[in-house]
Image 1 (cartoon, rainbow, N blue to C red):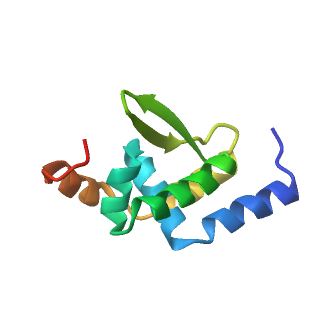
Image 2: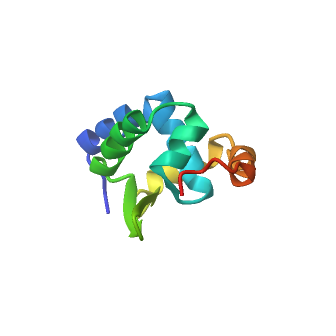
Length: 107
């Protein structure tokens, strides 16, 4: 599947934000819910939801419901041009390890 210049520009605009790029780096490690991402970014759930909405509208993330929680994961299908960028993002595994040990999780 070929991407148009306009599609590439729109994707690059989405990625030109520190929070959204960090979210993609986190989701590269595993799927997460809004409350987990908010905790990891030290921001509010509404702020994270707004970023996730933009990423979802841009086709970069997908959501799935598990019980009462909505989880987000990467959607890289048809986006081969982003694989190199995602691989070059700093690992967030250490942050996720801290989250796993935290007892204040939202669920």
